[in-house]
Image (cartoon, rainbow over all chains, first blue to last red; front, side, top):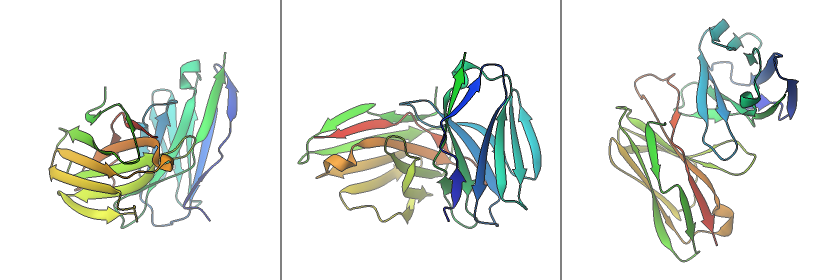
Length: 111
Length: 114
């Protein structure tokens, strides 16, 4: 089992709809979770971090964490074509000074 | 604009060349990282420096040699690379003191080995 798993997509969502991105992780002791957005040819950009169970909202983005289910998700409301990118889920493995990335989900917002 | 600066943005080198990638941050972070990213793959950790000391080497071939001259600078020295080493090389930094702190990435160096 991979440490961090994401559906690679592509995920196509119409403009204005909600995009839902999902991620599962294997280390039950993981304590910090991040979502990065990466445009083609660019570097990853941090868009959300979440550390405790529940929802965390920032503008059009909502991160959701369920440690019991070892599941973290990212919702993008009112999706825009500029949201089209690859979204990387990253988990800080307990006791290790490194992030483990999922394979990334390629998201396309259709006008 | 990113607060982690990498130079050069692009680099083409032959298999017999020696070159260096450079990274600089002024966020006061004491952990710095090198990642390698191939097309359509996630970033893959290479090295971690904590307080200017190498703390993680992910079994990287010796043709890649990292160096951390001070708390703001990180270099990656390249020698006798192979074409399959062509990739986007990403530098990142984070606060060591906070184990849960996120990584801040530079814009990367696009390396092509011919």
